[in-house]
Length: 300
Ligand SMILES: [Zn+2]
Image (cartoon, rainbow, N blue to C red; front, side):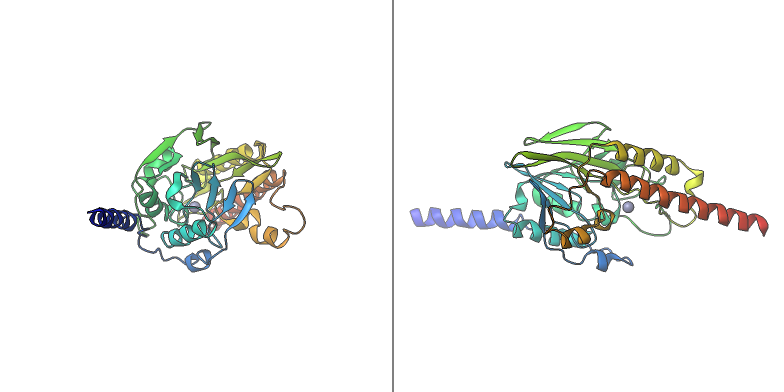
């Protein structure tokens, strides 16, 4: 009798395990997708905060001690790499309780649907971001929205919309939402404290603020340019010891990894201000280019 009971017990456990496998969504194809999705060994950034993303798309893991928080999920095809990186660090991905999304584009939110299904986590993003995240479709006011190009991603379940300044406590980790639209109408920057021994640092996961768009969109004609200026100003004024962002080249990840022997290069309390200057410079270049095109059209 005992043997039968045990057999049923182990079968039930196996079925339970079987049902919690990651089921990735269809791969997205784009010019830089393969390059972005190259594997990147996971590493500790500082304290409770770890990099678990791919070579070109960030995904950040925070260990609360009781559970895990994840920031962004890369492309659909990144989800398996993120899961493997988390496991490789010795964490159980099923302990992810909250997924925070910077902005709802396929290259940062594409893997979120599969990771949410795997974990049952709540998914937090801005009110505007939630409209795209929960439908898998860009909103028409997104600079990258196009009727011609399918640039959506798998719709995400269990999305919770948060407001600028909201403070979320997940198992003792306090995450503050800073609304930073411009690259998308729903861009959100997230910030939390990370401690090791007696030293605590404020980590800022600053959203993308690049002025890139679908063909025909003008930053000079809509609210996006002013949003980028205001968002850059917000980021430059945040308490910020460690800058992270959705694309690792924004915070010089590879250079910093190569210089890890000299202290912790990720700790830099002017990095957010420098990031703000760089995105404003990119915006100015974009506005200049739009002006040049307008003059050329006028001359013709
Ligand atoms: Zn984007």
